[in-house]
Amino acid sequence: MALYTSLPVYKLDYDLLINIHKTTKTFTREHKYTLGETLKKESIQLLVQVYKANKSKKEIRLNNIDTAREHLEIIRLLFRVTKDLNIIGGKTYVNSNLKIEELSKQLTAWQKYTARANT
Image 1 (tube, one colour):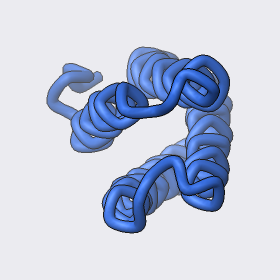
Image 2 (cartoon, helix red, strand yellow):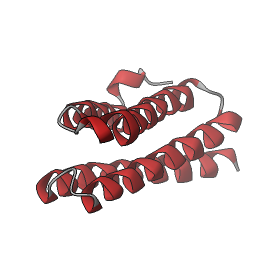
Image 3 (cartoon, one colour):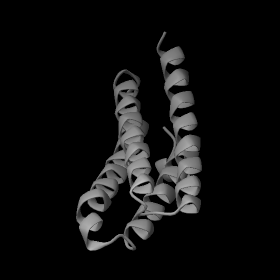
């Protein structure tokens, strides 16, 4: 088991979490406590699932990675909503989506590797 803080997926996930917290600071009051809080909670849950996947046994790891991917897709959806409501600009949306896409690729690769290792 690798130290979770040295995992590329963890580092990218942590950067996304920090980015979300910085971005939601600028939300209006109306959106800060709805979309903003949901984004923060989902990003924290994503980070927790990556940690759990790293420390879990191979049988449970696939479930943790799958749950992490679900949280990531919710984050992607919420960022789309914030863009469509003009809460964030196009540049912020694109930068966030690039991080989300890279994280999604890493989680998918990890999931495939774990599934192959279990067979």
